[in-house]
Image 1 (cartoon, one colour):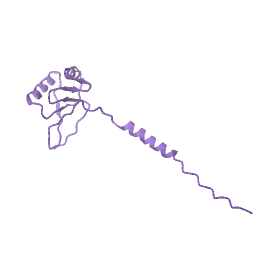
Image 2 (image 1 turned 180 degrees about the vertical axis):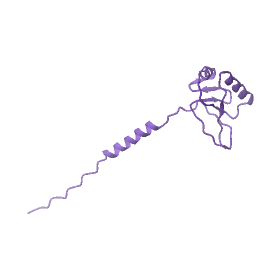
Image 3 (image 1 turned 90 degrees about the horizontal axis):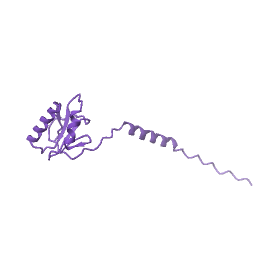
Image 4 (image 1 turned 30 degrees about the horizontal axis):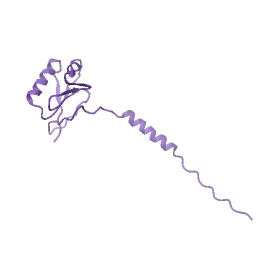
Length: 126
């Protein structure tokens, strides 16, 4: 008696190439992504109808109660860092919309005294 051999099963598809592609994509996105630190505190920006693109590298934050933050410095420690700053363009100011005008004027005056005369105010679109 002669039995037919059972049909051979096809080899399963290898998933190794797919895993390689996934890891290559992961490495690509990790290398090209810009990982930015979160802002030091929440700031509600004043509104404007015009869109503007701002650089995030040289950004001074001002909370509604007058607290300043620049990179890792907070409070009065921002002034030596701002004085040592060598800007090609303008300093970006992210001030809360509720900051009084007299506080903003005093800040701009103090920025001018440390050598920063070009300031861009960050605003939000309504």
